Length: 239
Image (cartoon, rainbow, N blue to C red; front, side, top):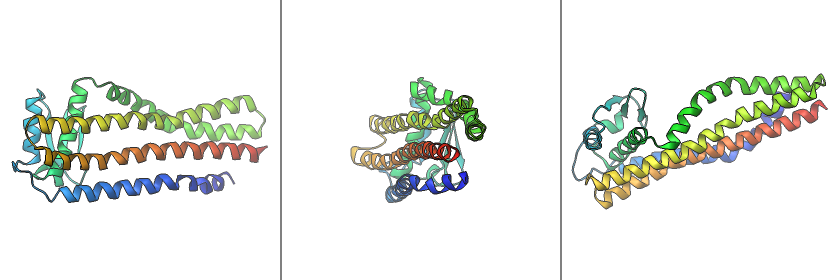
């Protein structure tokens, strides 16, 4: 019965799912549009990356090519920017914009950007919370049946709080990503790697990507709302 209650409550997630799909489509279409437009200087993305990193003093940061499309990322542990096949050897506005965004993350870490530190601290907590939240919630609901209500209430509360940490993580991730995009735009213009017209195209690509993080935040909020409804209805069913 509890399974079906949670399953049916999945309808709460529909707005988040729709927004997530729209965001992914927007990213892909915007990227494809500007991935057909070559930059005026014609430099490859990995060349621009190396130039901008060295210019900012990040001479030890490595650059790798990886498989996939839009799988670009920065790993602070190895101090490595990994660029996807659609970016690494490309000299398009979209490719340069994506790599500039990853360069933004490099300098966030090197300059001790506060939200990055907070997000890093949250990762081990999320790993633990993802393992504990559901067992605590299920045990709490079972204990409701055996009339250990005070203990059950505490277990449910702790489980819900642990589940809600994902919202905190998404809230912190959003300014991290927006700031990296802002840094990317400024770096491209200030270094002369792009003129204002080209940089405007980069801004559109990065703004489209930002919607995926907005969608993730909204989805996490709806997911918590779904859980709260589930617990409320399950407790009512138990009583």
